[in-house]
Length: 406
Image (cartoon, rainbow, N blue to C red; front, side):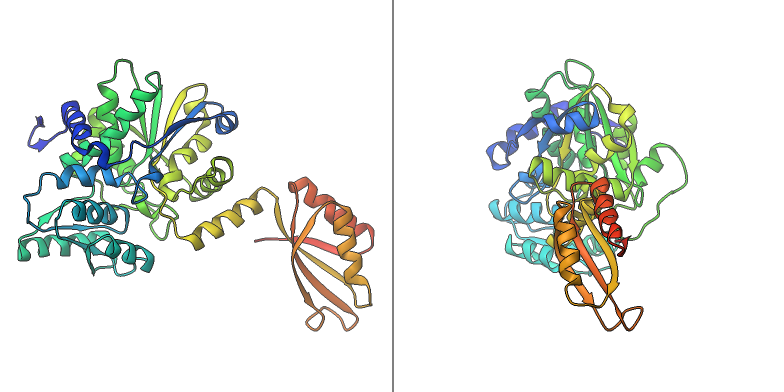
């Protein structure tokens, strides 16, 4: 393991050694070409399905590699809001190590339960991961536990770098690799693997506009973070790693910042087109290709789908919003006179226009007049133009119809 200044750095030998060490205990996930996404974004897109790891994210790799260095019988502790927690818990149990995970107090119950099911003791402390980290370090000293950092650790970075090795072994002529950035462990490891490849490979990181901490640091600018809730909670890191920042600087890694809307759209696209479920961080790479098409145009690009641990309710909302944004799911309001058969008439008009009613709210009492009634409907259509044709058909029958916002 080499060093640069006073900070330890990771070499390609460390990454290759990690690949040997973790072996078959971590999945060599599929890396496949997507013809449909390639057509949409104007580049040759290949997808690395890290969402298919046992715990649902790439974190298995770094956790396994780091835990192999822990003395048998010694307990370990980590802080995490989800994916790192599950990686440490799972591989700690496989290696016979007692694991404790400090998670923020607002961590979803499903993530707490999953971490416990994998064998860890969970303590809920702090409003965010940074407060959890402070408590985890305190407990490490109090209980003589070994602290496992989620990204700013040389063996964790080396483990994550094995993704880059696998991608380049499968597709050695890649022009670019794109992956999400939180603290920077994943992209740092990939950058090291790419730098040692036989031909140049550009590595690009992606952050959400609400937490662009690494992008800000690399550009030496004041924080542009918006903060708050984000669909990409797995990369909602307020302070990037010191080791990772140095590696990304050394390898000239650019970090692009994408909108929350683009991430949501990418989640929906991957579900519909690739039939795969990803979390917000897992969709960030595709979001970057959609928001910055000129950066990737005509190139052979590997995207890391780094995780799939998304709350089912969040996934449902994202899916419905995606359909709405494409004009395929619409809310319409129809006002009509309150006479028998009028509801049947509306249904027939919509049916004749080849649209489908999926929900009807009929308010005959809270209407605009004593002899009128209000219908609010959700309808399936092919696209925005089709939805507009449905409205025109309703208006042609002297019905007041309008499209409602979501």
